[in-house]
Amino acid sequence: MSHPIPHPNTHPNVQHCTSMAEVRQHIDALDERIVALMVERSGYVAQAARIKPNAAAIYDQARIDFIVSRVGAMAQAQGAPAAITQAAYRALITASIAFEQSEFARLRPEGLA
Image (cartoon, rainbow, N blue to C red):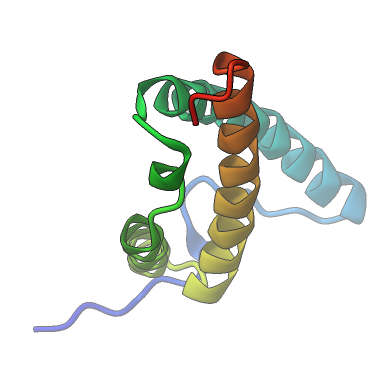
């Protein structure tokens, strides 16, 4: 038996707004939470740079594909467009790889990469 996918507007946390000011207020509040989570995620990316044995290990296409597929499925199951979540994660992963590469180089100034 299949279950219908809910529309994002019907998510229990989405409050009905009557003005753009209200919409923006809610989006701004969400952005604060999202940024805090991105900061936390970046801390783990920095640890990955410390743990990985060489610079070639930073880029892992199989892991990227897994993450993008997983978050797309999670979004769709919760009623959000998978394409938006997947695009956002692709951008996040690209920026995270660049950050991890810079962290890797910073932690190994002697060129052991």
